[in-house]
Structure formats: structure tokens, C-alpha cells
Image 1 (spheres, rainbow, N blue to C red):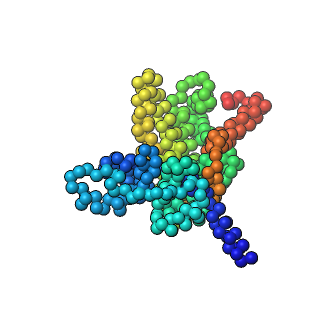
Image 2 (cartoon, rainbow, N blue to C red):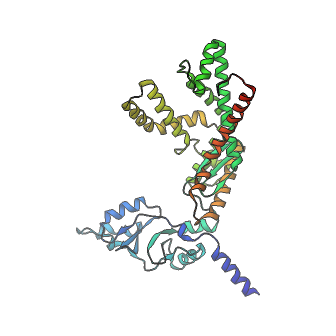
Image 3 (cartoon, rainbow, N blue to C red):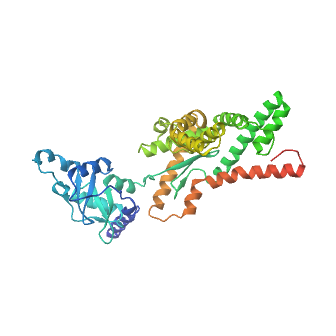
Amino acid sequence: MGSEGAGGTTLQQESCGPPIGVLARHCPAVSVRDPLAVALSALRRSTCGAIPVLSEGRFVGLVREADLRQTRADASGTPLLIGDVMQAVVAGIPGHAPPHTALQIMDSCAADVLPVLDLSGTYRGLLTRSDVLEALSGAVTPDRIGGMATPLGVYLTSGAARGGPGDLGLFLTGVALFACVAMATAVVFALTWFISPSRAVDLVYAVAGLPGAPVPWAWAAVAAVLGLLFRASPLAAYHAAEHQVVNAMERGLALTPERVSQMPRVHPRCGTNLVVVGVAAATIVTVMGGDVQYVAMAVIIALFLRFTLGGLVQYLITTKPPGPAEIESGIRAAEQLVQRHQATLGRPVGLFRRVWSMGMIQVALGLTAPAWIVSRIVGYLNLPIPL
């Protein structure tokens, strides 16, 4: 009975975790006939501390930084090739092997890097000891993380796995954005009506996209009030917490409230940057005219400023310092994402699932649903409001 228990434990350990093929890093490969300068450049770009060496497309060895220590002393004038300094590695590990097997091989040969091969022996990537230990601990972080702020908390996704509020939270994000736009329009309308009722009517027609008197300041005024309302809403704090937890995950930091709260509120992949590009380009085209050269110039300027101006807008408008509750929401979403990502590693993910996981469809539904309801009510009551 004791022997069966031990065997069962070993089998469970060896079968736990995803196959190492999905953990392999695609480090740049070099040839045995390449000059040593190629290896130096590849090592600088490698994330494994080593680079694979191929000969006629087959894996034959590794080059590590330690292999280059005596290079300067050995080079007497004849340029060295990568084949002169590499360490020959005869065997690799198949991509279908479990992480526990990879760790056993690393321990037996005192290696921190192993080549991953497919069934035909073709090189597929490199595996590091940290990759294996991360898989065994159940904490494999997605390579690319997206997210969104919702009224119910921070939402994160890897495309295949999701963490945080589900589709209801994303739908409510659209509802909240519609409410902010409606409130901003109402505020601008009320202020304009107080100054001039006729201009207020023109404003409604301009915002609704209907023909009427031109109101060039309409969208600018609504956008300004909308920014203030968004900054004051809980969405801005959740948005900041989302950025901070993603920044911490991408840096490989521990997801503690202290660490996460020290991360930047700005992220280069935030959708705010795209909005800024669109608004800046539209503004330039409106002011300077719709000629082709002005449109091209507007797009170039907007793309050039997307990170600088987008980061400023993120910092000043679309995020605000989060509190402990928002930080905890981000950490919970991250922990759920990592756990679910581990379970989906190696499984194919369809295009629809990836698009649905982005959350834009649910947000769009949340935006249009209240607009449709309001338009039906206005039509039923026969109110003279253009919608």
C-alpha cells in the first residue's frame, strides 16, 4: 500500500502543470558558422541567458555568457565562429513532457536551460529553470495582458482566460459611459440654456448629429465635462488599479498592495492612447480643413504624440489614485487570471473567444442598450427631443 501511494504521488507530480512546449521561449537562434559578433548581439536580446546554435537547421548546442569569458584571450587574430565557443548539447527535452520531468533532467545534469524539441527533433525553444518552477507553482503569468475598469471592479484578460467581473461588469461599463455622456450633455445644455436658449437648441442638434446651426464648441464642451465626470467616478480609480496591477505583473513583482500601489497609473497599451489619436486627428482636420495633406499630417502628428499626450490624458483624466478597495480588486482579478491562464495553457483559442474576451462587444452593448431604451420612451411619449 505504501508503494502504491508513492507511485501515485510521483505520477501526480509528473502529470501536473502544462506541457513544457507551451512554456518554451523563442530565443533567437544562430548558426555554428556565424561570427561571434552575431552571438553577442543575440545574447543581448535573449531572455534565457543563452542562445541556441543550429547546424543545417538542427539543434547542436548552446552559447552562454560564461562561454565567452576567454574569447578575447583566445582570439589571436583569426575571427572566432560560434561553433568554436559553443557547448555541445546532444539531447533536448520533448515539448509534451510535464514540468516535473524537466526539473528532474535539469537537476541531473546541473543545467538551468534546456532545449525543447518536437517529436522529429526540431528545435522549438528554450526552457529555463524559472519557467519550470513557475509552472509547478501554478503561477504562469500571461505574456500579454489586457484589461478594463468596470463598476464592479478590475477586469483582466489574456485572450484565453479572464479574471475579475464577467460579462455583466463589462456591460455595466457601457451603461456607465452612456450615463456619463448623457450627464455631460445635460450639464452643457443647461449652462448654454442659461446663457442663450437658442444656442442650447443648436447644441442638442449638433450633439445628436442632426442638421442645424453649426456649433463648433459643442463636442469640445461635452468632452471637457465628460472628462471631469469620468475622473470623479469610481471607474477612474479602478482604471488606475488595472494599470498598476498589469505593470506589476509585467515586471514580475509580487502582487501585494504595497507593491501594486507603487506602480505607475499610466500604461502604454491603454485604449486612451487610441482615443487621443482619433480626437487629435479629428481636431486638426476640423481646424485646418479636410484636404488629403491635412488628413495625413493630422494622423502623423497624432500617432507621434499618442504616448506623450495619451499618457498625460491617462494621468490627469482617465485615472485617479486608487484606494485599498480598488487595489485589492485588481489583485483578485490578477490572481484569478493567472490561475485560469494556467488551466488553458496549450489549448487552442478561437478568434471569437479572443474578441469576446477583449470586452469591447459587451461595452458596446451596454452603451447602445440605454440609448435604445431612451429613444423608445421618447418616441412613445412623442417628445420633441432629437435622438
